[in-house]
Image (cartoon, rainbow, N blue to C red; front, side):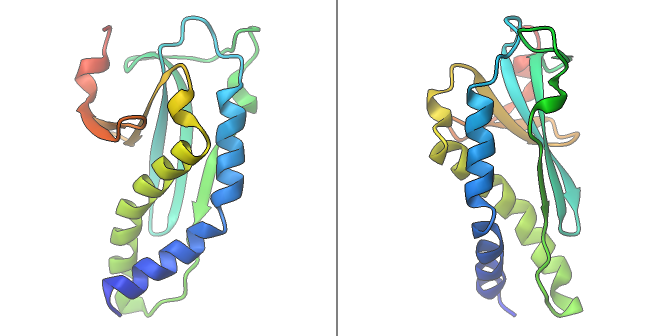
Length: 151
C-alpha cells in the first residue's frame, strides 16, 4: 500500500475525532488557569497507534503548575487519547505508524486553530515526550525548548 492510501486511512480515522477534539480545546480556552501560568504544553506520547496528548500548565519548561486559579487540582482538564485502529497488512504497520507520528502533530495543531486557539491569551506548545524541541502552536514554528526556561 502506498503512503497516499495510508494517509487517506489516517485522515478518515482522525476525521471522526475532529469535533470532540475541538470542543475539548475550546473548553481549555475558557478554563480558569493559575495567574502564574506562562504557557500551556501539550505533550504527545505514544507509538504503535496509541497516542495520548497530555496538557500541562507551565511556569517554564522546568516547572509546571498543579492547581488552577481557584486552587483546585487540574485533574478536570481534558486529555486527548487516540487509539488508531486501522486494519492494514502487518507489513504496512510500521509505515502506518511512522506516518501517524507525523500526521498527529499537524492534525492536532489544525484542530487548535479551528477551535480558536490563536486568540487564546497564552502561548501554547506541542512536543513529543522527551524531545528538545517544541512547536509553537499559534505560529506553527519549531523552537528549542531551552529558550523557554525562565524567560
